Image (cartoon, helix red, strand yellow):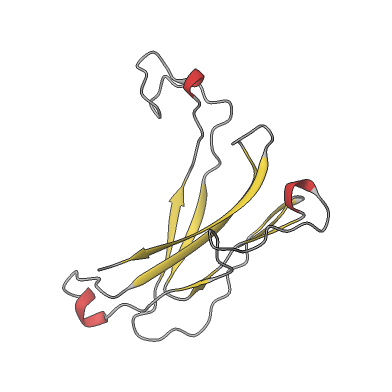
Length: 139
């Protein structure tokens, strides 16, 4: 997934799959609720909370192929990028599912990876850009 501070740009590249290859679109919405924004019940993420800005719904792709995320012009600085490192690898590669096992609802051995970027995240101030990669492994 690629994002530029001028606006979002999602780039999914499909390649020929092999048996057991998978791609799943995971619908998600993340809203940050600070302690001062909790409602009268004191429980986060309930209807009486008053977050400053609700999260934007988006779809995160999970794949047995390769997933990566990039941010261009990071933190509204032209030409700046968020480097890859130990906490966010440049790319993750999954592992195909065994179709004969999936037919029996057994996902063992499969590995789905995802990646997404966030622009002007509400973790601040200051509001910053970020990228995240993650793995869902079936044991």
